[in-house]
Image 1 (cartoon, one colour):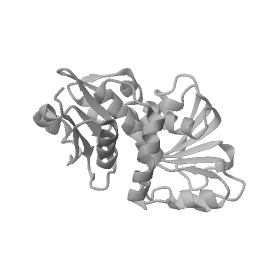
Image 2: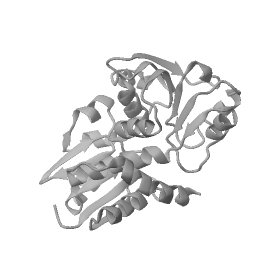
Image 3: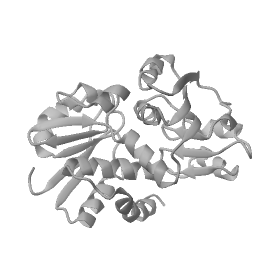
Image 4: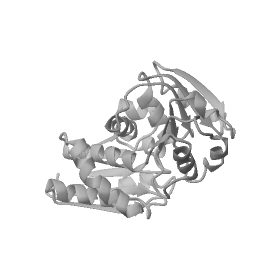
Length: 272
């Protein structure tokens, strides 16, 4: 690895991404000389970008819509990424590139930071790459996992992410019965779950984790708080998955809670 740690976030669109702010400030806080940028990479263009530019970087953050496409790269794919069929992190060890996902582990770390470690019934909104990472991470610490998805074609890969918990796939509807669950996780794009807010009433809601951080608050997140439930902002997932990416790039353990506490106010200010 060069003396300067070099990273970037890849996706489309990426102009809104707070990853550069997170990683650059983490460099400064840790006393690391580093560079971290945004690179616009369209769907079906990831392999071309990687083969042409991988020598310029030590690690890469993969965001939408590339989390599934990344699995086809000529790199070493770990068991986590293979099981959930989604990846958000490329990192280099000497001359070998590796692919993994820190979405699931970052999600669990964010929950634990808020004091939550065990659930009975969880509902995940959405069936894309982030949903699979969340479902895979919840497997074994949740009795029952339900996914609310728009197409049944994703059911099989979601179910294959689960080994211990029971699984149910529900076709998208506007009244999913939030009161049945002690955790609801929104992994859909901004605005996609807004109409679900109309089915939420006081006393129906426990904990809501929205992976969206901008725009904030989301319609569903605001209604959840108004109805007396607790809401965790997507900033928390961004923080912990990004810190874990940096730890992989550095090949050392980081104090995640300490670093998150330092970075959190800066990220919240950036979206305010």
